[in-house]
Length: 115
Length: 111
Image (cartoon, rainbow over all chains, first blue to last red; front, side, top):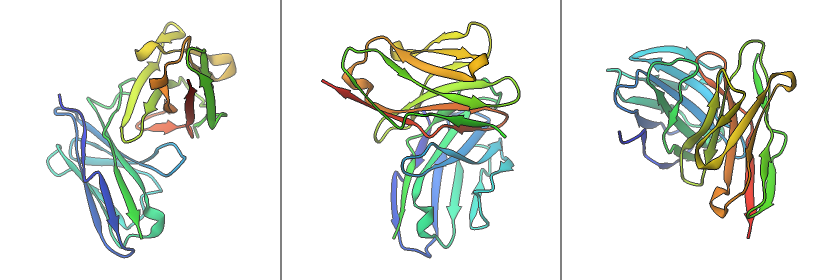
């Protein structure tokens, strides 16, 4: 068990560019979550997957955001036409089945800076 | 809708002193509550969680938390703080399929 990994750890981009982040959950974890954390705030939920199915999306996830988990293993989060307001830490978490009492295990995050 | 409030944005304590971090929640059903810690450059690490049973729960690193339904609170405590406890602490509630976090409390430890 190597934990949740995220790549890249840091990304600097210019406004208007597209960026893609990757998350590798703990193996055999069916549930995968994406959160966003801005400076001085707690993480906010973006979306989650049960295996390969994306089951819920927050209102924070505008049309410029898209997430996939094609084979129920790793996931990608793409932001198109980035804006300065997208600058944040993007956190991925996974849990075994998705029950409310389960621990969600978090990765180290990808810090995005949009210039 | 559910919410979590951490009233203290910053707390400074001396090493060896006791610590209490406050967390209040708003939720109409049984709350499933968590405390996470985040150190610089690190992901969120679970300290402890409560979902039923004994209202005083023990966690890692000597932390404990007490669930008080009448006060809608889930405060985190530690009897003696170590310099390595300096970090940001988040209280969270699972109301369905995701965690709702408070704004966090940054803990600083004086030598």
